[in-house]
Picture 1: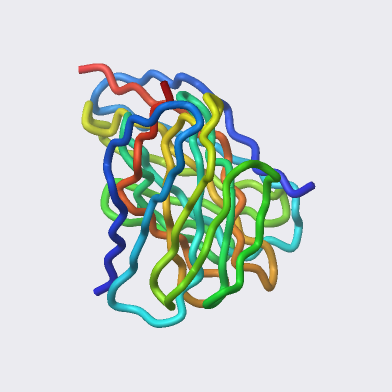
Picture 2: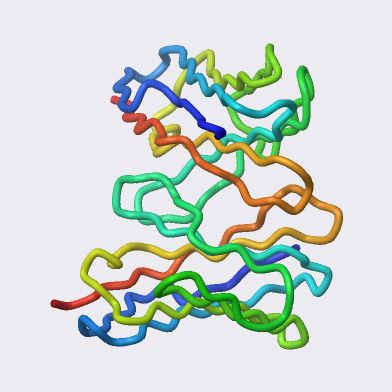
Length: 111
Length: 112
């Protein structure tokens, strides 16, 4: 059974701080990794994709991938109250198109 | 650019009534299509996926069915709704292998 694990939270950080969201996956053959943001009552929105080991930065967001440790993370710098949402980690295995989603981590950014 | 349309946004149905939710994608050909359900405060549950017209794979046995009558149209149906069918239904599409999925706005279904 291929799994993606996330701490459900809630993770609470003050405005302006760095929020660190973590995810582990069980299938060592996984090749594609994504982070989605889901506001309450809304559908998930893709915010980051990462395919190779290392860091990928996009604005205030940085995705980090370590395939040896089967670990992917999302850093949000200068967190804003508008970043308060549930963040879903998602993984696609080798040769696949089905995505395995984690249950999500709830993030609260306090003003 | 690609867009995905899903309707209705909200639906209230009595137990035992039929259901039809529709999803269409624009701006791409031969997308992979998906139906998910999300219970309140829970994760995404994959219900069906399709890699082409008439090709449907079911992930969870239940009283729901899916059809893909056209390349960019995906329909979720039920002949008789149960109370447990309540939830947030999401349609998604993806392109080539290993590419991310993109979601529609969802349908919030309440069963009375």
